[in-house]
Image 1 (cartoon, one colour):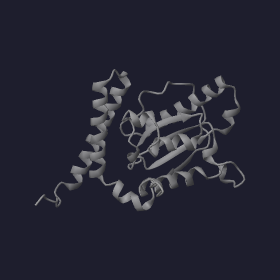
Image 2 (cartoon, one colour):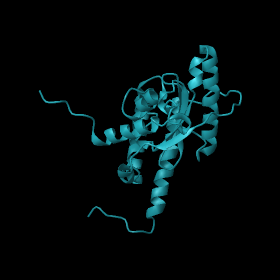
Image 3 (spheres, one colour):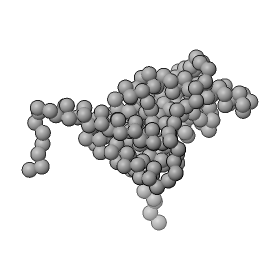
Image 4 (cartoon, helix red, strand yellow):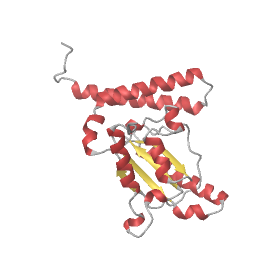
Length: 223
């Protein structure tokens, strides 16, 4: 019996980049545990314009959680068409290995404070003042963020094609259509509708940027 085919080449390359990023030792010290081995932590995703688009937390392990979002495994944000993994170029993570040893209630509270701090920072970095989370992350008391690690998860050989604005416009429009269809077919919470509005603003901005780039230039015709 022939061996089953593995994942598509692009998927395999991106998985390899994520593994390499998550394999870095904490603090850059070789004897330390890896970034991805931290059970607790917060993470953020950024698109090809450096725009923050999603913030989350985990108590299941940073490596597994991020991989589920970005490589086609189960993810509520992806399943609900809130997040398109194709949009993600960079990731930033805040490992919190010591939090795993705290009592559950203390761990939950600490993660909530760090997640909100990352979320609030993302809002200030965003040109839209918004990210694509299904809703606002509850405000908490301020906290100093732990050390973060940021890296690119798309290999150089794939970036040029994947960042092309026409392709991104098509993907973004498809995501909006899928999210709108989901809303029309189910009883959804109000924040999902706000996410749809943010996605529409993001599409309009990208389409406008592309039009401005081509205005007055040579545009390929269909002939």
